[in-house]
Image: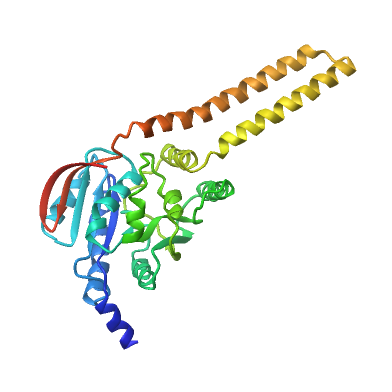
Length: 330
């Protein structure tokens, strides 16, 4: 036990904790306190390097979130602040933090700023990293006060994605650890429409999971509206699989076959074909509209990809109590 502890102290790594924030002024001070207490406890025990930091990424908040981050950054060297030029979404804020910090550390842990994800699990993530794992996924063993509808739709979505060949860790969100090797691999992915929960498992490498109990929000309210959750789900489907297009193809072939058989039966039995044609027009009209919509999603998102616009722009970056005003696009 003593030898193991000495070994850890000799080989302790620099770990950053990245927390994306959007309109979190009600909870961010408490988040800073709890995460800092955990960080300092690990540093004092020699579990991680004194160069370890927590990085708050402001995703274009309209409240005082950035002002709070900035003020704390300028008086506390253990807090790093990144300010995006405008609101881009949770996945982009995560990516901004990962890519901005990866050259300064050995591993990065990402978590939400609302304290729903158990801060105490951070140490277990790092222990798994020291055991040789490149990626450690946080898996929810309970989901706080989430409603039945959200739990059912979430579980159904994971099953749907896996059935379509997408590698996803069930009940994982964006609470995870990635080491430098995994971060360098992630930097090679150039998609502008991000779905990190599906993208990161495609990296491969050695991975494991850590279970944690999800808590209720410490303050404020969730910024993930139904529309945002639907957009994220659609991003996952369109960016990770083309099975919906295959489904349209097979559906078209099946309906065509059924139509031919139905037409022959009508002729053989003297049934009025006009009624059948009317029903077929309604059926085909709905199917065609649906099919064009699905294909349009793929075409539209590919159109966005080929323009190579920056996924986000970093306007301010504060590190080691020094403010740097940047216009960094990725």
